[in-house]
Amino acid sequence: MFKATVYVTLRESVLDPQGNAVHESLHSLGYDEVGDVRIGKYMELEMNSEDQKTAEERVRDMCEKLLANTVIEYYRFEVKKVEG
Image (spheres, rainbow, N blue to C red):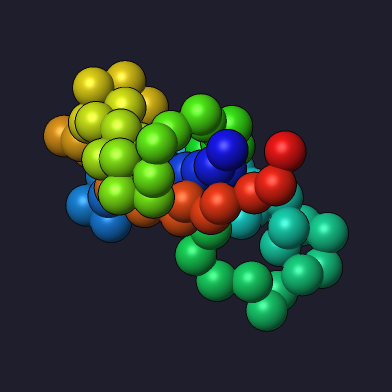
């Protein structure tokens, strides 16, 4: 059993209206030390795979096909073996 953690964020060149809204809200609450804010997605996947390499290949394929829009988003992931 493996657990994959996937992080998806907008590319730097893509405007982030949600991030801008959070940034402005934080400033209006007095958190002036906050600079740029980028909003992303976080996913956890439990997987039954034969081995670490296979799990990583499958997660990469999932990201490329569904979990991330690679035209405007970056993704990264971690795969760890878990007992269960």
